[in-house]
Amino acid sequence: MNRPDPEDLRRLAGLDKVIHEPGRLAIVSYLAVVEEADFLFLLDQTGLTRGNMSSHIAKLEKAGYVEVDKAFVERVPRTTYRLTTAGREAFDAYRINLLGSLSPAS
Amino acid sequence: MSAPQAALTDLERRAWRYDAQDGIVELLAGVLFLIVAIAVGDPRMMWMLALSVFPMRVAHKALKERYAYPRVGYVKLRSEEGAEFGRGMLTYVLVLLAIFVAGMWLLGDITSFAQWRRWFPALAGGYTAGGFIYVAQKAGLARHWILAAVAVAWGVTCAIWLAAPGNLGMQRWAVGFGVLCLVVGTLTFFNFVRTHPVRDAGRAE
Image (cartoon, rainbow over all chains, first blue to last red; front, side, top):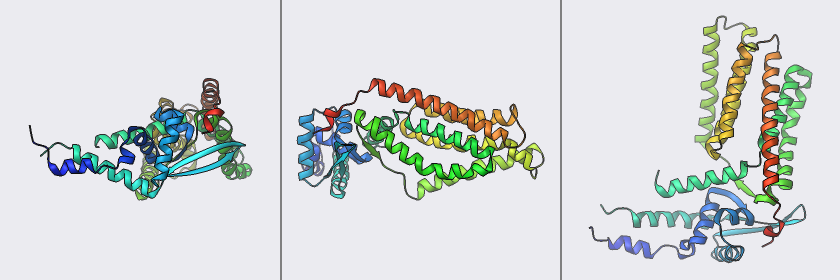
């Protein structure tokens, strides 16, 4: 068996911890493939509970990765989420780092 | 394609499928094809076709807001942009046109307008199929593949076996395909409304 490359392990340790959490990773992954989505859509797609979803979104918003827009549509409140440029860049960097760390040793 | 990229493509497909499950696009496409049938039948009614594009967008938004989003949530899909998408669309349009022109040449008199008019339903079917194939590739739903196949098959049928003088062939194609889209859209829409209750409580977070 090949010994792990210390460089790869350093990369793994440097993964963005805001995105690395499974719930947040699911939210960010979905927001990366659409332009924007609301709470209900993300709830159905990720399978998270409402409480979990709210707390993860709050953390992503605090990190500046997700932009939140609250509006009323037909007198019903709709909260829309979209990835910010920083969020998109952080997600791309996360994917590159993760792929680099887990790729088979040459 | 790497595994993470494949996973993202799958997520995108799920989002497209989620958005297409209500049948609203097919329903409105059906209405649009019926307007096409009227406009083709009487060129004086062509304004109806030109004016129908904006109301269709408004109707699509209104139906989504009223029936789809309160049930399954709102998602705005990423719009295709860039040179690659434009090139793909242009290639499809030109290749289909080239096949059509070659077909006209093989069938006899390429300068005969009557012959062109007779085969217009097949051309319309081919272009309509392009739209449905695009959505089918994105969403992976069988009904879009079927509608694409029927658009072409019905176009060829109207050109060969149901050939009619003047614009009647094209009108037949538009009415037939419009009714099909309307039926598919209506059934899908009512099934969607029946199986997905409104979840207002879930929207307030």
